Length: 571
Image 1 (cartoon, rainbow, N blue to C red):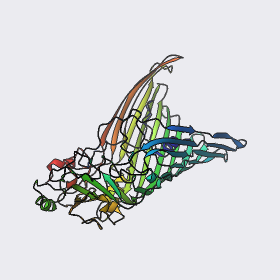
Image 2 (image 1 turned 90 degrees about the vertical axis):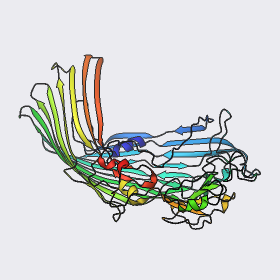
Image 3 (image 1 turned 180 degrees about the vertical axis):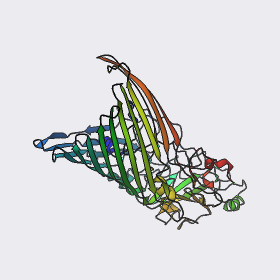
Image 4 (image 1 turned 30 degrees about the vertical axis):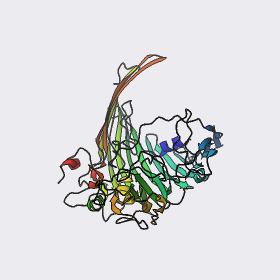
């Protein structure tokens, strides 16, 4: 099993099978609407860069072993196929204009390695003719080591990342990501027409970064060059620290200490076969339970200062500080002599955990209608969700009761000519998503994103020294400790409206739901030729999103397309 197969093991899907099978599965996922950019700005710039090729080698040795340990009683399957991926890159570094006498200019060869362990082991045990047990362990530990510089261009374009000191690119930089999946199952057949199955699974993964640089990271959010102008529309002095957009003194200093996801699940069902009720029936009744938990700690390793050279600031929370700054310059701009800066970051800090409990009951019947050539599959699923909020004092739990997630499914297949050559089929079903933890953890109090904005009155940005080592240097309110500059405002980009007259959380929120209709026909023209046709309509009925006109007005969380989501007509 590879890492991709690992993810397939732990994801839950509700499947509409083309043959008309409307079978109930133990869970399902729905791809919701694409998330909107709510940062209030358009990110990215058009560009086309042709890099030189790296020297890269991938080796995937391994083994597979399978067979009986005890004849007709105990069987083993074992495999281990690691991925060994190494990259070497030569970058020609050059001195930045702010440090023309640097000592690191010239070519430097840097390396990066990635190792992925892919192991799968399974034991099957026949206790008796009626009882079979199995257990499996799927292991996929990944590790990345080494930090590469931006590649040089193959056609002579400017490498904007070549002015960084290669001494700041750490050989121990990277991440580790242990991943394990444990599964246990048993099948019991007390009678020839009765099957009882039970399954238990445990999934664990934890992403953690390594070698994150420490210290205050200064990032250019604007080019600073000969064309730049200060608050009085004058060129910057010749000793200004000229550099391009994206320049930073050190690489990204955000560290993921832990991002652990755990999931326990149990599923049991009973299948009963009957052959004398207007044909044959295969009845199934089942129960599903899962507990999932996400525990995250991600923050900058010290602080971040973002520099907007020669840029006028537009306030988000209040105009008071900007009005005072505008009064100090003839052009009425809300900026310092050389622009503005903020300490904080353009990334979200995370801390804390959230969990969720999901349950389901389901029943279904696969009915072969005598000798008519018609098979009908029908089922009904009832789900229940409990999603506690990270901060229960400020935000509500998200719960969906048994009556809110009722999913009927029906399908059929017909042997048109009664000889197995032409099959017509159709199916329809409702599918409800198992809610992700990003809302109840991140949006409900765990995610932290504050920017402390200041007027920029110095060319020596290294004198800006925030001392707060959490939240990238900006506290929940007020100015940043250690920063001696003209303070403008503290902006919370993860704010959710808390005005009781204008609720931010939809009270009658509906679960994420889709409806899928599939129909088709298969024709076996000859033993060697088959024509297959299929039409599928997958409609997203409800999803859950955070919505806002602009960041400073706060976010609304609910179902898009409902009256609650009409943010343009809020009071």
